[in-house]
Length: 202
Image (cartoon, rainbow, N blue to C red; front, side, top):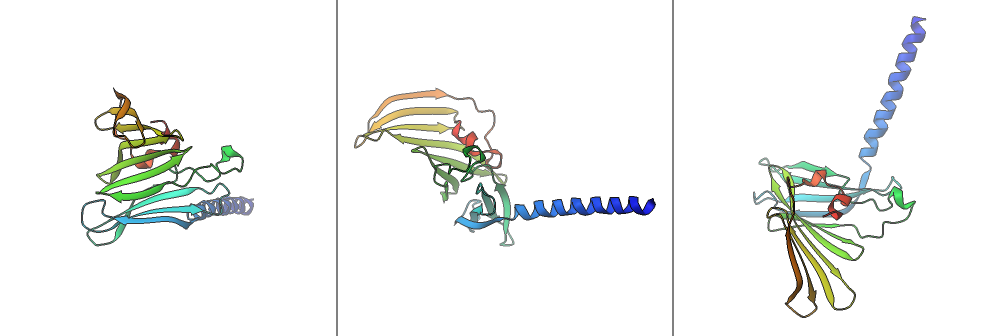
């Protein structure tokens, strides 16, 4: 009886180990490099790195954003890893269909991390600042073209807590129907906490 009990425990542990191993392997399936960007984010005059990778084994084709910051020993340290901020290429709710959008583009400009998206012909730029190893969302800019000669633009400043909307005719510097309002911001969102759907809500 003791032998049977011991065997049962051993079998249970082995099964759990297999499941854990499988989960570990799945986490490392982001093997297809989509984008690699380098620049100075932490103001130490050394290159930091942004990586966007895709999991080709998962039929939804999820994407992972990783940000590495340079350290005093000249090595790169992973400070952000997110699979939420970029929508999968073939989301479950689309039943095998492509999401219809291009993969966001990331770049570094004047020490700030910027993310560009193009969703349903609306181009958005999200700007993040580095603070205590966290990338906080501070600004959002959006442009939607009517297909003729007018663009509808939005500027959101999460630090100033303002949202400005206006229209602009091609070739003119004049801003039409400009509206400014205050928005409620309790805390600046961190990039690792944001999903692609969160960004669309602003």
